[in-house]
Image (tube, rainbow, N blue to C red; front, side, top):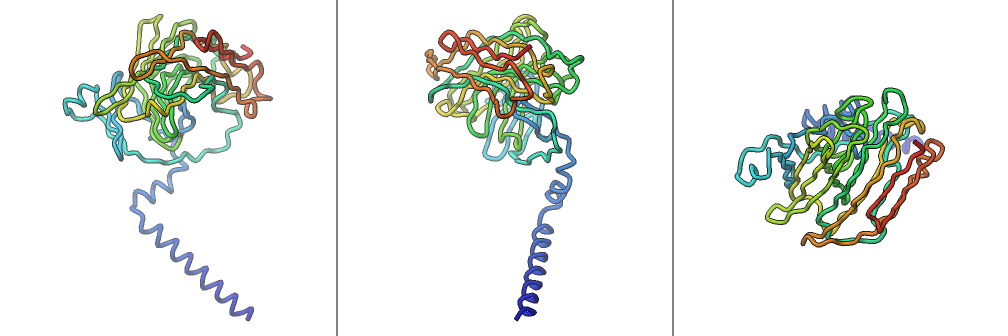
Length: 317
């Protein structure tokens, strides 16, 4: 009886191996190659976290991204899309997750403010802030920070982003601005507008504005008011205004201690409108990710002031 049982297990094992091999061999060659090479593909850090470099795309300032059932079509402008012009880039809605090596320095959202109560029908979200002091680490090598206001729903986010350091663009120790749209989180596709340079002390303005119509969507706008420079992106058929979450956040990567985060950032003139253009009140509350950052960073805290029209993201610097 024991010998028969062992023989049966051996036969079942052989069958499983054959089926596994057949399943893999029936994949297209490109899919097999993708599976084999995925872990070796370069990874970059974006405002939603680590992503495959091939899934992060820079587009010209003012570009329009139209999401369809199976791809993202990028046009030079929304008017070009309306006129039926050729798109300048087509991106398949493909999900592939980066295979990450161990990452000793911590990374991710550090602290943020978001809506305290449920809110619906957000048609515009704007805020002003000033580029804070740079992280004290000399030269800023390996340190990356993102500061932004954003609107998101599960699987998608739009955000005008202030960036410090080298991410998928830029260099260590410098400040930049760009407008971002990400579909599918860290496993999806990211698109950002042509970045602009900025600097400590410059005044920033960022907003997201909804439009209605046959292909409803959003304008994402980042402006350096001091230098009078801006960069924008428009995205169509994304984010339901009745299902979005507003956030104001500090995010960082390569963070080993207080010397790796910027100084306090104060957001002012925070305001919301509905899709009819009427002002609405959104009560914000602050959050610090203590579980991740206690023992690494000190002095964290989020102040929500003046009926949620001002938010301070505090660090020890």
